[in-house]
Image (cartoon, rainbow, N blue to C red):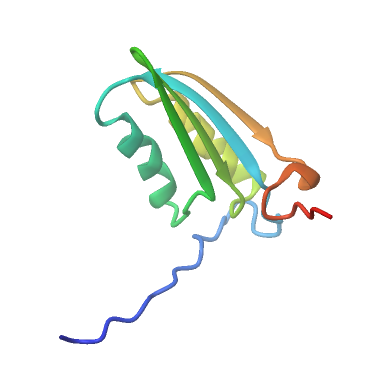
Length: 111
């Protein structure tokens, strides 16, 4: 069996905000509980070579409540992804918020 190597892709550069620092954000999405909604939502990140840090999904009857934390993109790119999320047919609500550094799981220091 051949040895497989892990290939790490760097995030796609943001040509419109090339000097912008990465911005941790949280997306809060409500969508119809269709079988393909989660795949379509996550595909918008995959197309940008982004892997969300955390994805939480709760089904409440006919609604999916999706919360996505991502920290690799600029605020500009986060807003573009947010607009694309809003345009998905099954999504009926989407909120985008920057995450404060103290509340960001990767940056939180407990003592």
